[in-house]
Length: 296
Ligand code: NAP
Image 1 (cartoon, rainbow, N blue to C red):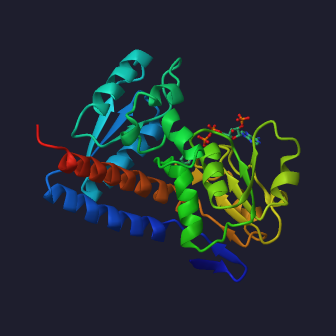
Image 2: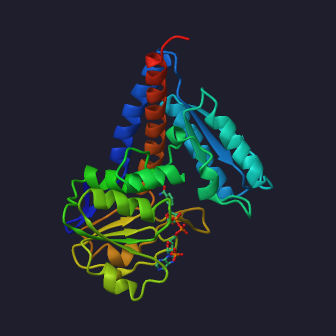
């Protein structure tokens, strides 16, 4: 935990990400020694530049962690059938332990629907309906890495959740909904807001903790949070000069908040680290499964 000013804590993601990466690398090395090098496949069907940047950064991080990363680029004209077929093929490939379906997808392709073609045990970004359903039912599943990253950062900085009121702004299946489930599991009192929420500021400004996952640059300004609130900014909005800004206006929220995640350097690095951790966990389970299988 670093203190940016006497009255504000910067909830950096760098330290928790480094700890997760170290642990992941050690597990990947052990698995490779034991004959199961962990494998991650990223399926891409877009020419979107920020998506390409993200995929390159995952591939680099995977390599550093000792994970074999395959990028299956199907091109921006790939049909939903072609994407599904590739996901089914990777799901059946024993060398692949984790599969990510990168968004955006071509028009007509539905990410949540196609993610259903990823084998549940390889769904390391919790994108499929089985993963989300199991998460909601309190059963073991990989949570979407970004949603889990919110909890990991709060835990790292010892922010108590039990009994506290949390306003989650955003209800997507990759961030808003799963983060609400994870917070509920930790005994927080959760309100989920979205674009039809009436008077958003009246909800967020009474919450102990605000989680912003909106995709609108600097939408949440000072009047959206109360003095002393903890604010988590999941937003990563590209700027014209090649930088990133969050969904929170740090300039006006910073002086009021007791703690705020930076963008970049907050939720982002932990998300990537967790994706890789999930991949080695999936590989570990696969290796354990094949050890326990009776000889044919
Ligand atoms: P999304 O699918 O576009 O969902 C955005 C949500 O925000 C929707 O539920 C939408 O409501 C709500 N919303 C939009 N405008 C609003 C407004 N004016 N007031 C209240 N709610 C509003 O986005 P997402 O995939 O969840 O991503 C959210 C943000 O997180 C983006 O900035 C994205 O880049 C970032 N992100 C970061 C990471 C990371 O690793 N750090 C990973 C994933 C996403 P409706 O449902 O009513 O439309």
